[in-house]
Image: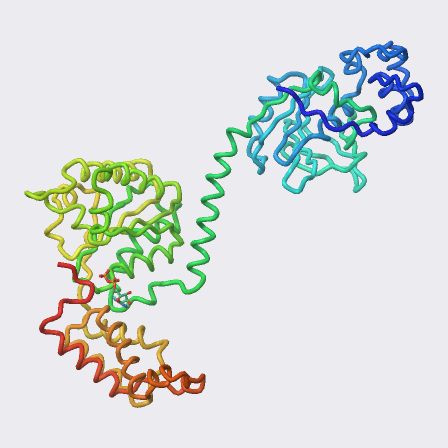
Length: 502
Ligand code: ADP
Protein backbone atom coordinates (compact mmCIF):
# COMPACT_ATOMS: atom_id res chain seq x y z
CA UNK A 1 0.00 0.00 0.00
CA UNK A 2 1.32 3.44 -0.84
CA UNK A 3 1.39 6.08 1.82
CA UNK A 4 0.01 9.38 0.59
CA UNK A 5 2.65 11.98 -0.10
CA UNK A 6 1.71 15.34 1.37
CA UNK A 7 2.67 18.61 -0.17
CA UNK A 8 6.20 19.37 0.80
CA UNK A 9 6.11 22.20 3.29
CA UNK A 10 9.45 23.51 2.09
CA UNK A 11 8.48 23.64 -1.51
CA UNK A 12 8.64 27.43 -1.83
CA UNK A 13 12.06 27.95 -0.38
CA UNK A 14 13.26 25.01 -2.41
CA UNK A 15 12.51 26.63 -5.74
CA UNK A 16 13.60 30.10 -4.66
CA UNK A 17 16.95 29.11 -3.27
CA UNK A 18 18.06 27.34 -6.41
CA UNK A 19 19.91 29.97 -8.35
CA UNK A 20 20.97 27.75 -11.22
CA UNK A 21 17.60 26.10 -11.55
CA UNK A 22 19.13 22.67 -11.14
CA UNK A 23 16.28 21.48 -9.05
CA UNK A 24 16.87 18.26 -7.25
CA UNK A 25 15.45 16.55 -4.25
CA UNK A 26 18.84 16.46 -2.60
CA UNK A 27 18.87 20.25 -2.62
CA UNK A 28 15.51 20.24 -1.04
CA UNK A 29 16.80 18.15 1.81
CA UNK A 30 19.88 20.25 2.35
CA UNK A 31 19.39 23.89 1.45
CA UNK A 32 15.84 24.34 2.58
CA UNK A 33 16.05 22.12 5.60
CA UNK A 34 19.27 23.34 7.07
CA UNK A 35 17.77 25.91 9.40
CA UNK A 36 15.57 23.25 10.84
CA UNK A 37 18.17 20.60 11.49
CA UNK A 38 19.53 19.87 14.90
CA UNK A 39 23.34 19.93 14.62
CA UNK A 40 23.94 16.20 14.92
CA UNK A 41 21.16 15.28 12.64
CA UNK A 42 22.50 17.63 9.96
CA UNK A 43 26.01 16.30 10.37
CA UNK A 44 24.80 12.77 10.32
CA UNK A 45 23.20 13.41 7.03
CA UNK A 46 26.35 14.99 5.59
CA UNK A 47 28.95 12.71 7.10
CA UNK A 48 26.97 9.64 6.29
CA UNK A 49 27.10 10.74 2.67
CA UNK A 50 23.40 10.51 2.48
CA UNK A 51 22.98 13.66 0.58
CA UNK A 52 24.73 14.61 -2.53
CA UNK A 53 25.33 18.26 -3.31
CA UNK A 54 25.96 17.53 -6.91
CA UNK A 55 22.45 16.81 -8.01
CA UNK A 56 22.60 13.10 -7.47
CA UNK A 57 19.56 11.33 -6.06
CA UNK A 58 20.06 10.80 -2.30
CA UNK A 59 19.95 7.31 -0.94
CA UNK A 60 16.51 7.36 0.50
CA UNK A 61 16.94 4.24 2.59
CA UNK A 62 19.91 5.81 4.29
CA UNK A 63 17.91 8.89 5.21
CA UNK A 64 15.43 6.65 6.93
CA UNK A 65 18.22 5.10 8.94
CA UNK A 66 19.39 8.39 10.38
CA UNK A 67 15.97 9.97 10.85
CA UNK A 68 15.06 9.69 14.55
CA UNK A 69 11.90 7.79 15.46
CA UNK A 70 10.20 11.01 16.60
CA UNK A 71 10.67 12.52 13.14
CA UNK A 72 9.46 9.40 11.40
CA UNK A 73 6.36 9.39 13.60
CA UNK A 74 5.84 13.11 13.08
CA UNK A 75 5.97 12.58 9.35
CA UNK A 76 3.08 10.13 9.68
CA UNK A 77 1.13 12.48 11.96
CA UNK A 78 1.13 14.90 9.02
CA UNK A 79 -1.12 12.56 7.06
CA UNK A 80 -3.34 10.98 9.71
CA UNK A 81 -7.07 11.50 9.89
CA UNK A 82 -9.68 10.84 12.55
CA UNK A 83 -9.69 7.14 13.36
CA UNK A 84 -6.06 6.55 12.35
CA UNK A 85 -3.75 4.80 14.75
CA UNK A 86 0.03 5.17 14.62
CA UNK A 87 1.98 2.48 16.43
CA UNK A 88 5.69 1.95 16.90
CA UNK A 89 7.26 -1.14 18.35
CA UNK A 90 10.10 -3.63 18.01
CA UNK A 91 7.97 -5.98 15.89
CA UNK A 92 4.51 -6.20 14.39
CA UNK A 93 3.82 -9.26 16.48
CA UNK A 94 4.54 -7.44 19.73
CA UNK A 95 2.36 -4.51 18.65
CA UNK A 96 -0.49 -6.84 17.71
CA UNK A 97 -0.37 -8.43 21.13
CA UNK A 98 -0.41 -5.18 23.08
CA UNK A 99 -3.27 -3.84 20.95
CA UNK A 100 -5.29 -6.99 21.40
CA UNK A 101 -4.85 -6.81 25.17
CA UNK A 102 -5.98 -3.21 25.38
CA UNK A 103 -8.70 -3.11 22.75
CA UNK A 104 -11.28 -1.97 25.31
CA UNK A 105 -9.51 1.32 25.82
CA UNK A 106 -10.21 2.52 22.25
CA UNK A 107 -13.53 4.27 21.97
CA UNK A 108 -12.90 5.33 18.37
CA UNK A 109 -13.20 2.98 15.41
CA UNK A 110 -9.75 2.36 13.90
CA UNK A 111 -9.89 3.04 10.20
CA UNK A 112 -6.19 2.87 9.37
CA UNK A 113 -3.13 1.69 11.22
CA UNK A 114 0.42 2.86 10.50
CA UNK A 115 3.14 0.63 11.90
CA UNK A 116 6.71 1.85 12.41
CA UNK A 117 9.26 -0.78 13.31
CA UNK A 118 11.98 0.33 15.66
CA UNK A 119 14.04 -2.36 17.30
CA UNK A 120 15.37 0.03 19.95
CA UNK A 121 11.91 0.22 21.55
CA UNK A 122 11.12 -1.95 24.56
CA UNK A 123 7.38 -1.68 24.17
CA UNK A 124 4.62 -0.29 22.00
CA UNK A 125 3.89 3.38 21.47
CA UNK A 126 0.35 4.00 20.21
CA UNK A 127 -1.04 7.33 19.04
CA UNK A 128 -4.62 7.79 18.01
CA UNK A 129 -5.96 10.68 15.96
CA UNK A 130 -9.19 10.96 17.89
CA UNK A 131 -12.59 12.47 17.06
CA UNK A 132 -11.45 15.88 18.35
CA UNK A 133 -8.58 15.77 15.90
CA UNK A 134 -6.17 15.45 18.81
CA UNK A 135 -3.19 13.14 18.93
CA UNK A 136 -3.95 10.93 21.85
CA UNK A 137 -1.30 8.76 23.38
CA UNK A 138 -2.62 5.41 24.57
CA UNK A 139 -0.54 3.31 26.92
CA UNK A 140 -1.14 -0.16 25.51
CA UNK A 141 1.74 -1.62 27.52
CA UNK A 142 1.56 -3.58 30.73
CA UNK A 143 3.90 -1.06 32.40
CA UNK A 144 3.86 2.66 33.20
CA UNK A 145 5.09 5.35 30.86
CA UNK A 146 6.18 8.76 32.00
CA UNK A 147 4.83 11.80 30.26
CA UNK A 148 6.45 15.21 30.64
CA UNK A 149 4.06 17.71 29.22
CA UNK A 150 3.67 21.47 29.36
CA UNK A 151 0.82 20.84 31.79
CA UNK A 152 2.89 18.75 34.20
CA UNK A 153 4.45 15.35 34.62
CA UNK A 154 2.30 12.27 34.65
CA UNK A 155 2.78 8.59 35.22
CA UNK A 156 0.57 6.92 32.64
CA UNK A 157 -0.58 3.57 33.86
CA UNK A 158 -1.53 0.75 31.46
CA UNK A 159 -4.61 1.77 29.46
CA UNK A 160 -4.30 5.45 30.41
CA UNK A 161 -4.71 7.92 27.58
CA UNK A 162 -3.60 11.52 27.27
CA UNK A 163 -3.65 13.97 24.39
CA UNK A 164 -0.27 15.31 23.38
CA UNK A 165 0.97 18.80 22.66
CA UNK A 166 3.96 19.68 20.55
CA UNK A 167 7.09 19.16 22.65
CA UNK A 168 5.65 16.71 25.20
CA UNK A 169 8.09 13.92 26.01
CA UNK A 170 7.30 10.28 26.62
CA UNK A 171 9.77 8.12 28.51
CA UNK A 172 9.70 4.44 27.88
CA UNK A 173 12.61 2.80 29.69
CA UNK A 174 15.77 4.35 28.27
CA UNK A 175 13.98 5.79 25.27
CA UNK A 176 12.84 9.39 25.38
CA UNK A 177 10.48 10.33 22.63
CA UNK A 178 9.52 13.90 21.89
CA UNK A 179 6.11 14.39 20.37
CA UNK A 180 6.26 16.59 17.28
CA UNK A 181 3.50 17.51 14.91
CA UNK A 182 5.98 17.97 12.10
CA UNK A 183 9.38 16.37 11.53
CA UNK A 184 12.56 18.43 11.38
CA UNK A 185 13.18 16.98 7.95
CA UNK A 186 10.62 16.42 5.29
CA UNK A 187 10.33 12.66 5.08
CA UNK A 188 7.21 12.56 2.93
CA UNK A 189 9.02 10.94 0.04
CA UNK A 190 10.34 8.10 2.15
CA UNK A 191 7.36 7.36 4.37
CA UNK A 192 6.66 4.09 2.67
CA UNK A 193 10.21 3.00 3.52
CA UNK A 194 9.64 3.14 7.27
CA UNK A 195 5.91 2.69 7.76
CA UNK A 196 3.57 -0.10 6.93
CA UNK A 197 -0.10 0.83 6.44
CA UNK A 198 -3.10 -1.33 7.23
CA UNK A 199 -6.26 0.19 5.82
CA UNK A 200 -9.45 -1.09 7.43
CA UNK A 201 -11.80 1.61 6.13
CA UNK A 202 -13.61 -0.70 3.71
CA UNK A 203 -14.34 -3.15 6.49
CA UNK A 204 -15.31 -0.74 9.23
CA UNK A 205 -17.37 1.69 7.16
CA UNK A 206 -20.39 -0.64 6.77
CA UNK A 207 -20.19 -1.45 10.49
CA UNK A 208 -20.14 2.25 11.38
CA UNK A 209 -23.13 2.81 9.11
CA UNK A 210 -25.01 0.02 10.82
CA UNK A 211 -24.30 1.42 14.28
CA UNK A 212 -25.28 4.91 13.15
CA UNK A 213 -28.55 3.61 11.77
CA UNK A 214 -29.28 2.21 15.21
CA UNK A 215 -28.46 5.53 16.84
CA UNK A 216 -30.70 7.41 14.41
CA UNK A 217 -33.46 4.95 15.09
CA UNK A 218 -33.14 5.63 18.80
CA UNK A 219 -33.21 9.32 18.07
CA UNK A 220 -36.45 8.94 16.11
CA UNK A 221 -37.90 6.77 18.83
CA UNK A 222 -37.02 9.28 21.54
CA UNK A 223 -38.40 12.06 19.43
CA UNK A 224 -41.70 10.26 19.09
CA UNK A 225 -41.96 9.35 22.73
CA UNK A 226 -40.93 12.79 23.94
CA UNK A 227 -44.20 14.25 22.65
CA UNK A 228 -46.37 12.15 24.93
CA UNK A 229 -45.41 8.78 26.17
CA UNK A 230 -48.10 6.22 26.74
CA UNK A 231 -47.71 4.60 30.10
CA UNK A 232 -49.62 2.16 32.28
CA UNK A 233 -51.40 5.20 33.77
CA UNK A 234 -53.24 5.50 30.46
CA UNK A 235 -54.76 2.05 30.86
CA UNK A 236 -57.85 1.60 32.99
CA UNK A 237 -59.35 -1.50 34.57
CA UNK A 238 -56.66 -3.96 33.48
CA UNK A 239 -54.55 -4.16 36.62
CA UNK A 240 -54.23 -7.94 36.45
CA UNK A 241 -52.93 -7.89 32.86
CA UNK A 242 -50.48 -5.11 33.70
CA UNK A 243 -49.24 -6.94 36.77
CA UNK A 244 -48.64 -10.15 34.75
CA UNK A 245 -46.75 -8.25 32.05
CA UNK A 246 -44.68 -6.36 34.58
CA UNK A 247 -43.55 -9.62 36.14
CA UNK A 248 -43.06 -11.38 32.82
CA UNK A 249 -41.44 -8.62 30.72
CA UNK A 250 -40.88 -5.26 32.41
CA UNK A 251 -38.90 -6.45 35.42
CA UNK A 252 -36.67 -8.88 33.47
CA UNK A 253 -35.83 -6.02 31.06
CA UNK A 254 -35.20 -3.49 33.82
CA UNK A 255 -33.43 -5.75 36.28
CA UNK A 256 -31.70 -8.45 34.18
CA UNK A 257 -29.22 -9.20 37.00
CA UNK A 258 -32.07 -10.62 39.08
CA UNK A 259 -32.98 -13.10 36.34
CA UNK A 260 -29.57 -14.51 35.49
CA UNK A 261 -30.46 -18.11 36.19
CA UNK A 262 -34.07 -17.96 35.12
CA UNK A 263 -35.51 -19.49 32.03
CA UNK A 264 -37.69 -16.64 30.92
CA UNK A 265 -40.91 -17.08 29.04
CA UNK A 266 -40.68 -15.07 25.81
CA UNK A 267 -44.17 -15.45 24.35
CA UNK A 268 -47.38 -13.95 25.73
CA UNK A 269 -50.87 -14.30 24.32
CA UNK A 270 -53.37 -11.59 25.20
CA UNK A 271 -56.89 -12.68 24.43
CA UNK A 272 -60.11 -10.77 24.80
CA UNK A 273 -62.75 -8.76 22.98
CA UNK A 274 -61.64 -5.97 20.66
CA UNK A 275 -61.21 -2.51 22.17
CA UNK A 276 -60.25 -3.68 25.66
CA UNK A 277 -56.76 -2.17 25.48
CA UNK A 278 -54.48 -5.00 24.30
CA UNK A 279 -52.58 -2.77 21.88
CA UNK A 280 -52.55 0.08 24.37
CA UNK A 281 -51.05 -2.13 27.07
CA UNK A 282 -48.33 -3.47 24.75
CA UNK A 283 -47.33 0.05 23.72
CA UNK A 284 -47.36 1.27 27.32
CA UNK A 285 -45.21 -1.71 28.29
CA UNK A 286 -42.65 -0.97 25.57
CA UNK A 287 -42.44 2.64 26.74
CA UNK A 288 -42.23 1.78 30.41
CA UNK A 289 -39.38 -0.63 29.73
CA UNK A 290 -37.77 1.67 27.14
CA UNK A 291 -37.74 -1.25 24.74
CA UNK A 292 -37.59 -1.22 20.96
CA UNK A 293 -41.17 -1.75 19.86
CA UNK A 294 -42.39 -3.31 16.67
CA UNK A 295 -46.10 -3.64 15.99
CA UNK A 296 -47.43 -5.90 13.27
CA UNK A 297 -50.91 -6.77 12.23
CA UNK A 298 -51.70 -10.33 11.27
CA UNK A 299 -54.22 -9.33 8.66
CA UNK A 300 -51.81 -6.96 6.94
CA UNK A 301 -49.04 -9.52 7.07
CA UNK A 302 -51.20 -12.11 5.42
CA UNK A 303 -51.36 -10.10 2.22
CA UNK A 304 -47.92 -8.47 2.44
CA UNK A 305 -45.89 -11.53 3.20
CA UNK A 306 -47.33 -14.22 0.99
CA UNK A 307 -44.49 -16.11 -0.66
CA UNK A 308 -41.70 -14.57 1.39
CA UNK A 309 -43.13 -14.88 4.84
CA UNK A 310 -40.33 -16.99 6.35
CA UNK A 311 -37.63 -14.54 5.25
CA UNK A 312 -39.56 -11.59 6.55
CA UNK A 313 -40.17 -13.26 9.84
CA UNK A 314 -36.46 -13.99 10.18
CA UNK A 315 -35.61 -10.35 9.39
CA UNK A 316 -38.16 -9.14 11.91
CA UNK A 317 -36.61 -11.23 14.66
CA UNK A 318 -33.12 -10.14 13.62
CA UNK A 319 -34.16 -6.51 13.88
CA UNK A 320 -35.60 -7.16 17.34
CA UNK A 321 -32.44 -8.98 18.45
CA UNK A 322 -30.19 -6.21 17.08
CA UNK A 323 -32.16 -3.60 18.97
CA UNK A 324 -32.86 -5.48 22.17
CA UNK A 325 -34.44 -5.12 24.63
CA UNK A 326 -37.43 -5.29 22.35
CA UNK A 327 -41.09 -6.12 22.26
CA UNK A 328 -42.78 -7.46 19.14
CA UNK A 329 -46.53 -7.01 19.19
CA UNK A 330 -48.63 -9.11 16.83
CA UNK A 331 -52.17 -7.79 16.59
CA UNK A 332 -54.84 -10.11 15.17
CA UNK A 333 -52.41 -12.95 15.62
CA UNK A 334 -55.02 -15.55 14.65
CA UNK A 335 -54.74 -14.32 11.06
CA UNK A 336 -51.19 -15.63 10.77
CA UNK A 337 -51.25 -18.48 13.25
CA UNK A 338 -54.74 -19.84 12.81
CA UNK A 339 -55.73 -23.45 12.84
CA UNK A 340 -54.89 -25.01 9.57
CA UNK A 341 -57.84 -26.04 7.50
CA UNK A 342 -58.79 -26.03 3.87
CA UNK A 343 -57.75 -22.42 3.26
CA UNK A 344 -54.39 -22.46 4.93
CA UNK A 345 -52.21 -19.59 3.67
CA UNK A 346 -48.86 -20.18 5.33
CA UNK A 347 -48.91 -23.80 6.30
CA UNK A 348 -46.69 -25.60 8.74
CA UNK A 349 -43.54 -23.93 7.46
CA UNK A 350 -44.47 -20.50 8.72
CA UNK A 351 -45.64 -21.67 12.13
CA UNK A 352 -42.57 -23.87 12.51
CA UNK A 353 -40.28 -21.03 11.52
CA UNK A 354 -42.00 -18.83 14.06
CA UNK A 355 -41.54 -21.38 16.82
CA UNK A 356 -37.89 -21.95 15.89
CA UNK A 357 -37.17 -18.23 16.08
CA UNK A 358 -38.93 -18.06 19.45
CA UNK A 359 -36.92 -20.98 20.70
CA UNK A 360 -33.66 -19.33 19.49
CA UNK A 361 -34.29 -16.15 21.46
CA UNK A 362 -35.11 -18.28 24.48
CA UNK A 363 -31.93 -20.35 24.10
CA UNK A 364 -29.67 -17.35 23.46
CA UNK A 365 -31.17 -15.43 26.34
CA UNK A 366 -32.02 -12.48 24.07
CA UNK A 367 -34.08 -9.77 25.67
CA UNK A 368 -36.81 -10.08 23.04
CA UNK A 369 -40.45 -10.63 23.94
CA UNK A 370 -43.37 -11.44 21.69
CA UNK A 371 -46.89 -10.39 22.62
CA UNK A 372 -49.61 -11.85 20.44
CA UNK A 373 -53.12 -10.45 20.67
CA UNK A 374 -56.25 -12.20 19.52
CA UNK A 375 -60.00 -12.00 19.89
CA UNK A 376 -60.26 -15.65 19.09
CA UNK A 377 -58.00 -17.71 21.27
CA UNK A 378 -59.56 -20.97 20.18
CA UNK A 379 -58.83 -20.14 16.54
CA UNK A 380 -55.08 -20.24 17.16
CA UNK A 381 -53.02 -23.04 15.71
CA UNK A 382 -52.51 -25.56 18.49
CA UNK A 383 -48.83 -25.89 17.47
CA UNK A 384 -48.51 -22.35 18.82
CA UNK A 385 -50.63 -22.66 21.94
CA UNK A 386 -49.20 -26.01 22.98
CA UNK A 387 -45.58 -25.48 22.10
CA UNK A 388 -44.59 -23.89 25.39
CA UNK A 389 -43.05 -21.04 23.39
CA UNK A 390 -46.14 -18.98 24.26
CA UNK A 391 -46.18 -20.05 27.85
CA UNK A 392 -48.33 -17.25 29.16
CA UNK A 393 -51.98 -16.71 28.24
CA UNK A 394 -53.51 -13.59 29.73
CA UNK A 395 -57.16 -12.71 29.43
CA UNK A 396 -58.00 -9.08 28.73
CA UNK A 397 -61.69 -8.87 29.60
CA UNK A 398 -64.23 -6.11 29.03
CA UNK A 399 -63.98 -3.72 32.00
CA UNK A 400 -66.05 -4.11 35.17
CA UNK A 401 -67.71 -1.08 36.78
CA UNK A 402 -64.61 0.10 38.56
CA UNK A 403 -62.63 -0.39 35.32
CA UNK A 404 -65.18 1.71 33.44
CA UNK A 405 -64.77 4.47 36.03
CA UNK A 406 -60.99 4.42 35.66
CA UNK A 407 -61.20 4.48 31.87
CA UNK A 408 -63.67 7.37 31.96
CA UNK A 409 -61.31 9.30 34.25
CA UNK A 410 -58.41 8.66 31.91
CA UNK A 411 -60.26 9.83 28.82
CA UNK A 412 -61.81 12.90 30.42
CA UNK A 413 -58.64 14.01 32.23
CA UNK A 414 -57.59 16.34 29.44
CA UNK A 415 -61.12 17.39 28.41
CA UNK A 416 -62.86 20.59 29.52
CA UNK A 417 -65.83 19.37 31.60
CA UNK A 418 -68.74 21.52 32.74
CA UNK A 419 -69.58 21.54 36.48
CA UNK A 420 -72.80 19.58 35.98
CA UNK A 421 -71.04 16.46 34.71
CA UNK A 422 -71.81 13.49 36.99
CA UNK A 423 -69.09 10.94 36.26
CA UNK A 424 -70.55 8.36 38.66
CA UNK A 425 -73.82 8.36 36.74
CA UNK A 426 -72.03 8.26 33.40
CA UNK A 427 -69.89 5.31 34.47
CA UNK A 428 -72.95 3.30 35.56
CA UNK A 429 -74.61 3.95 32.24
CA UNK A 430 -71.51 3.09 30.26
CA UNK A 431 -71.18 -0.14 32.21
CA UNK A 432 -74.83 -1.02 31.50
CA UNK A 433 -74.10 -0.48 27.82
CA UNK A 434 -71.24 -3.02 28.15
CA UNK A 435 -68.80 -0.43 26.85
CA UNK A 436 -65.22 -1.40 26.25
CA UNK A 437 -62.28 1.00 26.65
CA UNK A 438 -62.44 1.85 22.95
CA UNK A 439 -66.19 2.54 23.26
CA UNK A 440 -65.61 4.89 26.19
CA UNK A 441 -62.86 6.76 24.32
CA UNK A 442 -65.24 7.05 21.38
CA UNK A 443 -68.19 8.31 23.53
CA UNK A 444 -66.05 10.95 25.27
CA UNK A 445 -64.90 12.23 21.89
CA UNK A 446 -68.45 12.32 20.51
CA UNK A 447 -69.60 14.23 23.62
CA UNK A 448 -66.89 16.80 22.82
CA UNK A 449 -68.33 16.97 19.31
CA UNK A 450 -71.84 17.45 20.77
CA UNK A 451 -70.54 20.45 22.73
CA UNK A 452 -69.18 21.93 19.49
CA UNK A 453 -72.64 21.54 17.89
CA UNK A 454 -74.48 23.01 20.87
CA UNK A 455 -72.19 26.06 21.09
CA UNK A 456 -72.29 26.71 17.34
CA UNK A 457 -68.52 26.14 17.10
CA UNK A 458 -68.67 24.39 13.73
CA UNK A 459 -70.82 27.22 12.36
CA UNK A 460 -68.31 29.85 13.49
CA UNK A 461 -65.49 27.80 11.99
CA UNK A 462 -67.41 27.65 8.72
CA UNK A 463 -67.93 31.45 8.73
CA UNK A 464 -64.38 32.15 9.79
CA UNK A 465 -65.53 33.98 12.94
CA UNK A 466 -64.13 31.44 15.40
CA UNK A 467 -61.74 33.06 17.90
CA UNK A 468 -59.45 31.98 20.72
CA UNK A 469 -62.05 33.19 23.22
CA UNK A 470 -64.58 30.78 21.67
CA UNK A 471 -62.13 27.92 22.16
CA UNK A 472 -61.73 28.77 25.82
CA UNK A 473 -65.51 28.77 26.34
CA UNK A 474 -66.03 25.17 25.17
CA UNK A 475 -67.09 22.92 28.04
CA UNK A 476 -68.64 19.44 27.72
CA UNK A 477 -71.90 19.20 29.68
CA UNK A 478 -73.77 16.21 31.12
CA UNK A 479 -76.29 16.64 28.31
CA UNK A 480 -73.53 16.31 25.69
CA UNK A 481 -72.54 12.99 27.24
CA UNK A 482 -76.16 11.81 27.38
CA UNK A 483 -76.58 12.57 23.67
CA UNK A 484 -73.35 10.80 22.78
CA UNK A 485 -74.41 7.72 24.74
CA UNK A 486 -77.88 7.77 23.16
CA UNK A 487 -76.28 7.79 19.69
CA UNK A 488 -74.00 4.97 20.72
CA UNK A 489 -76.78 2.79 22.13
CA UNK A 490 -78.95 3.38 19.06
CA UNK A 491 -76.26 1.73 17.01
CA UNK A 492 -75.73 -0.92 19.63
CA UNK A 493 -78.09 -3.48 18.19
CA UNK A 494 -76.65 -3.27 14.74
CA UNK A 495 -73.14 -2.36 15.62
CA UNK A 496 -70.13 -4.50 15.96
CA UNK A 497 -67.70 -3.48 18.64
CA UNK A 498 -65.32 -0.77 17.48
CA UNK A 499 -62.30 -2.24 15.80
CA UNK A 500 -64.03 -5.56 15.30
CA UNK A 501 -63.05 -7.37 12.19
CA UNK A 502 -64.99 -10.52 11.63
P1 ADP B 1 -57.45 -3.82 21.45
O1 ADP B 1 -56.04 -3.89 21.05
O2 ADP B 1 -57.77 -4.64 22.64
O3 ADP B 1 -58.39 -4.07 20.32
P2 ADP B 1 -56.88 -1.04 21.73
O4 ADP B 1 -55.79 -1.04 22.69
O5 ADP B 1 -56.55 -0.91 20.29
O6 ADP B 1 -57.75 -2.32 21.92
O7 ADP B 1 -57.90 0.12 22.13
C1 ADP B 1 -58.22 1.19 21.26
C2 ADP B 1 -58.32 2.49 22.04
O8 ADP B 1 -59.34 2.41 23.03
C3 ADP B 1 -57.08 2.80 22.84
O9 ADP B 1 -56.15 3.50 22.07
C4 ADP B 1 -57.62 3.65 23.98
O10 ADP B 1 -57.84 4.97 23.54
C5 ADP B 1 -58.96 3.02 24.23
N1 ADP B 1 -58.87 1.96 25.27
C6 ADP B 1 -59.08 0.65 25.09
N2 ADP B 1 -58.95 -0.03 26.25
C7 ADP B 1 -58.61 0.88 27.18
C8 ADP B 1 -58.33 0.80 28.57
N3 ADP B 1 -58.36 -0.36 29.22
N4 ADP B 1 -58.01 1.95 29.22
C9 ADP B 1 -57.97 3.12 28.57
N5 ADP B 1 -58.26 3.26 27.27
C10 ADP B 1 -58.57 2.16 26.56
